[in-house]
Image (tube, rainbow, N blue to C red; front, side, top):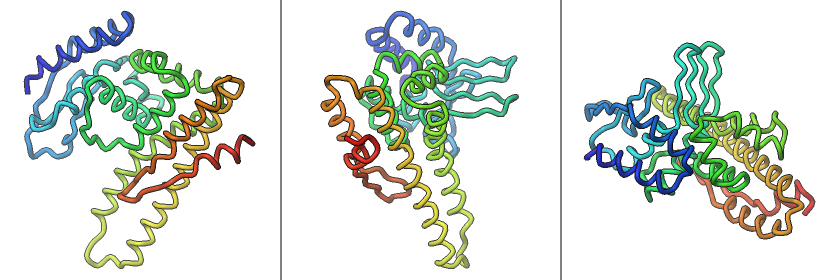
Length: 275
């Protein structure tokens, strides 16, 4: 791939689509990135990565969508070396304070932007995160959420959501989104730990517990979206139209570990909001 050409296409597209302030952030952050082409046998970076030092690590065999995804990470990242603090889009990490939050919403929204502006479907593995990132943007608005992301301001996103829900619920929502990535890694490690002598009962029990936990997490995420949407738009004259649109978006079956989960969102609206 011609990475210089892809970077220029990225900048040209962003200049057309973003306001001047947001584009300046993108331009400054992209200016000093390096690209590390990895050996094909290094599977740990199969989908690419971006580091606080400004390096995109990627396989030559990966598609353009993967590279654009990593460019969005680079465009929205700020690293404070003195404080050991890394902000990348909505992902906030502080080594000294042992804080690490927002990786789920960050990966989901990064994938949303990649699809929106570069018509990409690169099977990033972030389908759950993408789904809920779309729902959050539906509530707070495209321009505002894009700016928060490019300004590396998880705090602004949290404060905006707290206008329509509690801080406790908002932080729980972000924590639940992070779980998909953590549980995905845990699942892979667990499968590797099973041996030929592992009994079917033990194998089945672990995945039944995982299934129950995932279903609970989905329902908590949906509950937050429903409550937040209602609290913001309950007095809006177009509420019914917005509600129907959201129900349509939320009723899409989701999946984890090859199992599909279906939701009756309409009844969840009625139950929680007496509609």
